[in-house]
Length: 123
Image (cartoon, rainbow, N blue to C red; front, side, top):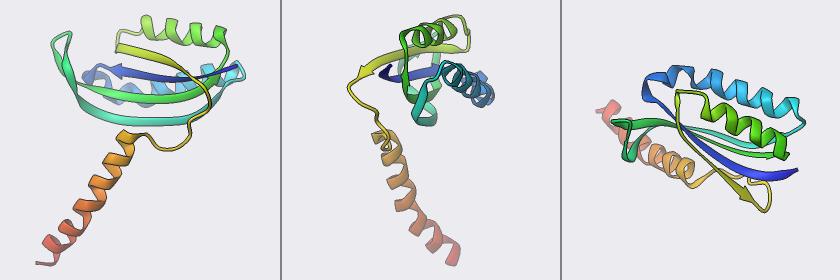
């Protein structure tokens, strides 16, 4: 089995269905004996360029350890799911479990705004 990093972008109108999609992909991976090392839901973000006249989309990142058959099955599911606008699969040398730079940036941003919110509430 090999390690892969998978990012897929979901249509913004389908954001409420993302948890169900993630669960479906998790069971697909689990049934084939694969492992999920990292799963991050980045939420709705601005796209670099419009896709199907959309300017925002819902991003999801997964780091998985799966076989080729499972990867083919996942990519087939992405291609035939109309809610998935784009997907990218990269082969990695080893399992990545630490938080991605997107999540670290978001966490530091929320920590820096937390003291300001407390000051505003106290005033």
